Image (cartoon, rainbow, N blue to C red):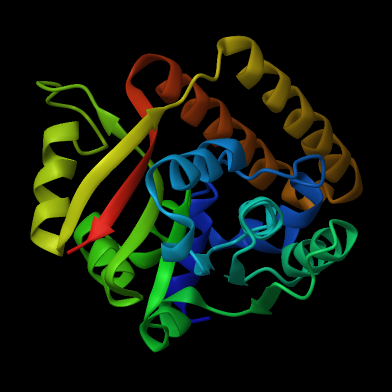
Length: 253
């Protein structure tokens, strides 16, 4: 990966420095889902898209493969997942085998900024809580649109800010809608996050335990791990008070 890609990957994992990347498998070992809900994504597809229209899927930034495996197991889709972290890809392969869908899932280690432009004609593409890994929202949407056939569907997990907030770090919902239209998408449905403060507290506790362990074993990186934990806390606080997490089902037109 080049420097810019590493920076985008770090930002997608809520870190201000690529130095954290080698430690992410340890820090996130207690999590199967890395941000996106498989129930929400499978539910949106099964409710709004006919079975004949959802045969193949591409999951960019697939993490540990939870979404891809759910699409294969519950909807019978053939799924290709790409992620930059080898340990996550190996866990995804193990999950597919464990769930009996290894024949439907192909997971690869790769840089999605390089691989995404090479992919096309999928029935469905997934971009689940990957943030700026593919650049600014319009750049990301343009890239995702090219991976789909006309009439295909994008499952996008991101967030929006309330209207009228001059300090918002996320687009407003109306801004997202304008970008969807410009990028060639029609909004079919959406689901807002139902996570609570208690959910976030539990997740922060898990991360804090792993941070403490790494600080003990790598004292030279104490500040790096503390900054990562602070960034996680900041993201959860933002989700509780400033932005709304949402999963959209968009149709390529």
